[in-house]
Length: 425
Image 1 (cartoon, one colour):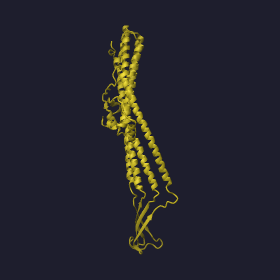
Image 2 (tube, helix red, strand yellow):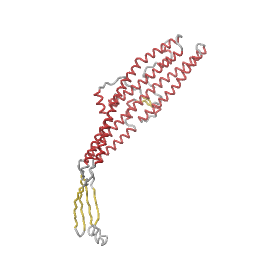
Image 3 (cartoon, rainbow, N blue to C red):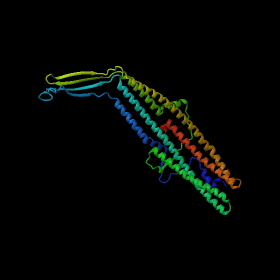
């Protein structure tokens, strides 16, 4: 007899990847839909708010000091009184209205605005990085759910066939064709398979909940279902020079570079404090009995005696040094991350191909031979169960290898070619 005649092994020999069945009332979700939802989840919304605040800072920075309007009453004689008559024209009160405006020197406004603009650019890059991070988490959750679905399908079929085999064994014991001890061992295997179903269902619910949290879709977690969007088993081709170019385009590197430029502008602005701002002013005075129209012109500026803003300049220089170190650190981390991702794609693709082309076929042949030998009495039940367990573990390990490659390949595309995923290619 062929091994395909026995339901338990037939279930184990399903080719990877098996298509998951959508449960009743389930909501199928593609990888592209999940990634699109992740681009606007709550974490991204928070980063978008920070960007709006940074852009508002640019508006605030690009403004000259506002003019100051001054009105006053003076020269009021508390001993002799202010006299009779109309208050504005006859009473002895010095009435004055003036206007003052500060002239910022040293390009302070331009430097202040430039620093704010670079900070806003950093906030934009931070938003891009948050989006990418959320998509990375989402794609990992998507493939975790997809693998959990297929693992559940495999284990449920195994449990059903194990139960059927146990029932058959009980009938054979009654007919005297099988030892009671062997039937008990088969029953134990069926019970273990039933508990595996419960564990697989729990893992699927956990994966669905994690994906629901990262996407924020309106579908209830228990109704969430991942469509089988497995990527091809290929590997990226990239030179060291190409890796360096990708590093410079990473959003966290762009953010660090923008913060460095903001710190440079802030340092220039601190040095510009050495040029004192001048406040120009004029006022119109009216004092009855002396003159109806008195004009005052004035100019004010701070005298920088004994202090040249050394503290502000030193702090800005320190912030610039920190920004330079941060940029170098982020660039190194980005380079290492891309190199790691590339290596993960290469190794996981090779591992998944090895399972698909070599390990799984070999495990199937071994299981078929063990089944045939057991039927002919040339193999013990222990060896047969070991062969079946090996095949089961191999099938599930092959599924895990495919899921690892899917995560690595999609993460690589998100870091290097995000537009291909956005277009659904």
